[in-house]
Image (cartoon, rainbow, N blue to C red; front, side):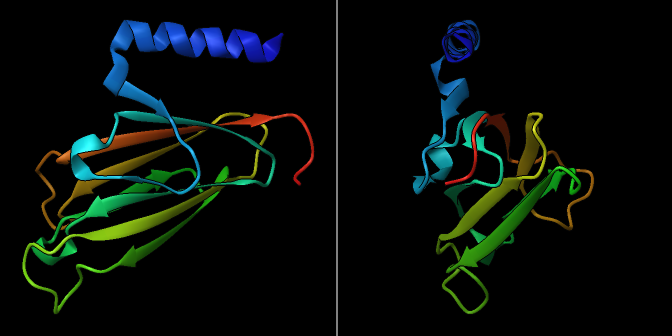
Amino acid sequence: MKRLLRWLAVVALIAFVGMDAMAEVKDGTTFWLGTVPKELVAERRMGESVRFSLEENASTGFKWNVVSNTNECTVVLKHRGGDKGATCGAPGLLDVTVTSRVRTPVRVEFRYCRPWEKDVEPWKILRLVVNTVSGEQQ
């Protein structure tokens, strides 16, 4: 019953804010800059990780930065390609692994920007919500 209610809430929210605004994340998904939704939702058991990749272009200074409550989750970022020495404009990927350490929903925000530009809005913002479901880690 709880799962049905959660599913109905997600469907209602998608209908309200638009189809491209929110997506359920599946492990191993790669989001290219043009397809990054505003919000990702994942359901995991306590201790299970959410894994996905985000395109970035570090050769031009743009990188994904993360904002999260480190007491609630562990966030591991691994940059691949597009770093120093690469052709300017060459894209790379950021591999993201988020593991919740609490039973309440965890919210992590990713900002795509140049870290040194302090008074500039991020080019993109992605919000990840990880809901913990009952059961033990497999």
